[in-house]
Length: 136
Image 1 (cartoon, rainbow, N blue to C red):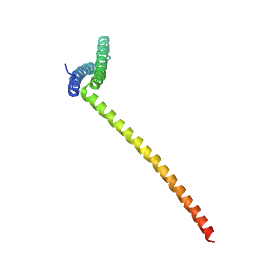
Image 2 (image 1 turned 180 degrees about the vertical axis):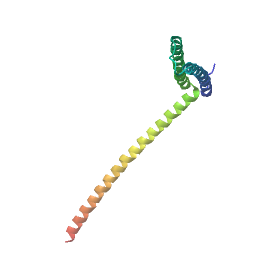
Image 3 (image 1 turned 90 degrees about the vertical axis):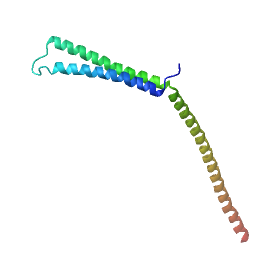
Image 4 (image 1 turned 180 degrees about the horizontal axis):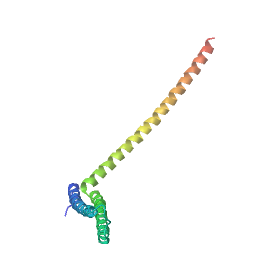
């Protein structure tokens, strides 16, 4: 069985999350309907217990959404597309490192040439000074 594609993993995750979000909305609606019954009246013990249960259920659904997201990231990492992209990025990075090393070597060579030019200039001044002394 071939690895699922990036799009397959994403579509599956979106479907799972949509279903969980629908459940979360329904639970939130039930919570709101209990709280909206009579805003002036205190909640009954039964309502309080039901609210606690509904909130716990909603929290569990939100935790499930988070877990689906984490599992989806892991599954996406295992797709051929992401593996290929990671390999391409690694190759580009390696290429850039090679280019950087060459640029550093060129920089070192440029410094050496600059040092040689400075020394040649100093030598030129000394030779000119000697030549001027020999003229007099």
